[in-house]
Amino acid sequence: MSNKKSGEKTLLWSVIMSSPGPLVVGLGLLSGRSSTQIADFIRRSSELLAIVMSYVTYKITMKSDFVSEEKKQNLERKSNVFVGLMMCVGGLFMIGLTLMSETEDKGNVIPGLVIALLGVVANGLFWRKYTRLNRSEPNAILHVQSRLYRAKTLVDSCVTIALLSVVIAPAAKLSYWLDFAGSLIVAIYLVWCGIRTMIENKKEGESL
Image 1 (cartoon, rainbow, N blue to C red):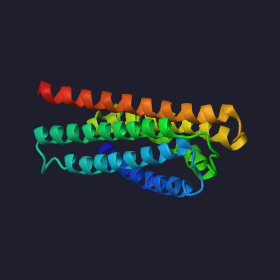
Image 2 (image 1 turned 90 degrees about the vertical axis):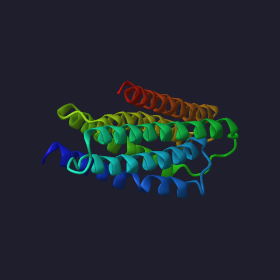
Image 3 (image 1 turned 90 degrees about the horizontal axis):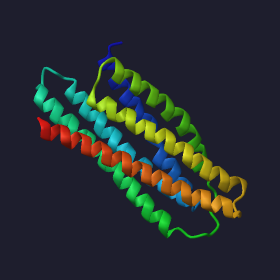
C-alpha cells in the first residue's frame, strides 16, 4: 500500500476510533462527576473535530490533479492551526472546570476509566503509525497528527491514573488531589501543544 493510501486509511481509522469516546464518556457523566472525567469529555470532543478536519484536508490535498502545491500547503497550515486551536480550547475549558470542581462524591467513573485505558493502547498505536508514515514520506498533516496522538497517549495515561485512584479510594484525599492534578496536567499539556502547533504553522505561512 502506498504511503498516501496508508495515511488516508490511518486518518479514517482515527476518526472511527475516536468517535465513540465522547459519547461513552458523556454517558458516564450521567452517573459520575469526576473533574477529570468532565475534562476528558471536552478534550475528546475537541480532538474529534480536529481529527475530522485533518482527514478531510488530507483527502483534498492528496488529489494533486486538483490542488496546486501552494493551495495544498495553505490548506495544510489552516488545518493544523485548527487542530492546535481545538487542543487549546479543550485545555482551557478543562482548566476552568477543574478549578470550579467540588470535593464531593465523584460517583461512577468506570466508563471514563475504561475509555482512558483503551485510549492508552489505541492512541499509542496511532502515535507510532503516524510517526512511521511521516518519517517515510514527510507530510504536514501526518506530522501534526503524530504530535496530537503523542499528547493523547500521555494524557490518557494521566487520566487513567487519576480515575483509577478514585475507583480504589474514592473518599481518600490522595484520590481527590490526583483527580484534580490529573485534570490540570491534561489541560496544561494540551494548551502547550496547541499553542506550539499554531505558532509553527503561522510562522511557516509568514515565511512563504
